[in-house]
Image (cartoon, rainbow, N blue to C red; front, side, top):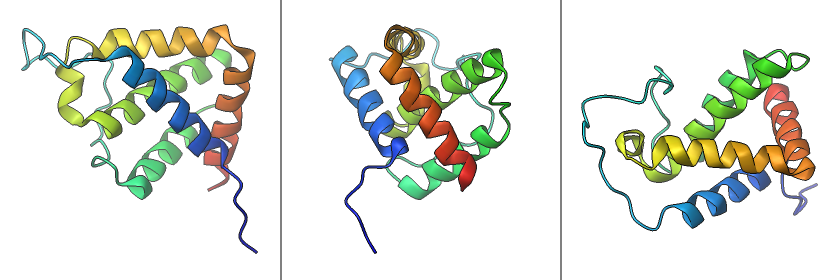
Length: 130
């Protein structure tokens, strides 16, 4: 029986999308576009707006995380935020001057609000079930 319930992952993706758009009025290329972000994933990024590919990639990241280990969860959160931003803005965005500051700002926003922290935990649980 279908429901109109919004999944935790969709809800968090929409929140991250809104946060990202609010922080990037314009995208400027980095001074050294050949120098990739050092924390960027080495695996291919999901093609822009291919929701199933994004979900699969996030599932892979979530499967590698120990939910009881806070540093592991924080690292996974950073990786997941990066993946979502690259999915939303395209893989070239990792070379943009705003990429790393945006990832950091979103992380700080998530840290500041217990409701966002819980939504992330719900997202991780949802992704680990797949």
